[in-house]
Image (cartoon, rainbow, N blue to C red; front, side, top):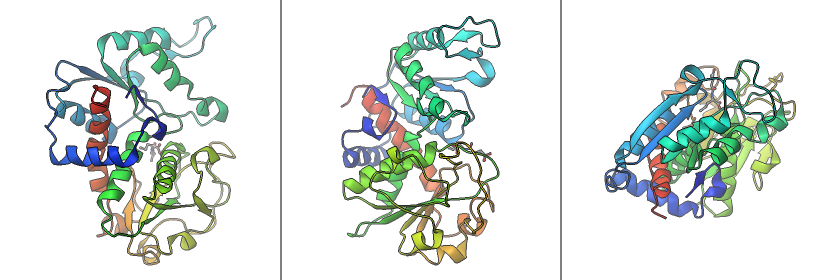
Length: 320
Ligand code: SN0
């Protein structure tokens, strides 16, 4: 594997999920594979789970890890070509990425969208430039439009917690927030779930208020409804996440109905397990009674980030 940017970089979903679960059973089975290899993790935005789980995964494969907080410790990066750098940017991504590629065997990069210019964000300019200039395999640690390590961990979590012969109903449920958040997590979750649905692994529904439709690129085959209560009927997994509008790009639109999942709404479901990528704002996005209740999977879900990262790194180190 030379790149992990989207679900399209995975050949066989069930195979990679099984591989992650095998690594969970035997974390050190490949501790020699990454010996004397270096992973560089480059952050242009904050991170807790991605940073720690990817480091842990790399360490269990025997790798050394270097972390670069580009937003705090690095030079201000220029990404445009053909401009005289006479302003605030100090170093061009052409040199910065190429230099990091000299020091690392695999690189990961996190860069959120700016949520101002939709075409610019959705072009994935920064991730693409970084990948092409660094010259080594690159893992997305959340780009402008996707968060594949999160979605992979989510699929592992659903697979792990579904032990019935039937196909589980998975609902991606929009939640309220006070800040405009990226569409990366829901886009990516939807893209992975649509692929899982096509493989007969899940039955996938998206619920969001009017004006919050995701780009259709990510939702092929998903059922989409504008009522949370309707979507929750028969749900086995509810994946809670806020996102800002795609159509009215980056905006927070007025929403009248109650969209925060609480125990009363959870009672509509088929005793559903509740997921969230975290960080979560309690009693704004998701009721604490749900987060603290027996149906919450948020902590084991975050735990599975290690096995997702480890399965990806293992492939980048040359196995498959
Ligand atoms: C990010 C997002 O893409 O939604 C990262 C999720 C893994 N979340 C936030 O930026 C939350 C910020 C906040 O103020 O709650």
